[in-house]
Length: 78
Image (cartoon, rainbow, N blue to C red; front, side):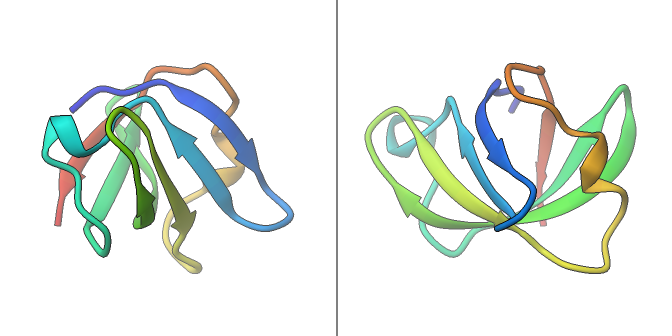
């Protein structure tokens, strides 16, 4: 999957994505987050709507501070 980041809040570790239930995303799924083919973090999905999902950045994985709003990322289901 290659969603866009709708928003990211580094202080809370919350990320809103442009994918959702219609893309097969479910609450509790965990993803490796790749940016420019490098893992920059891991994400756990906390809330899913039809075409959007909200997740939290899992601590101690990668460099999530490199993520910025509206960037395209790649997700690999763990």
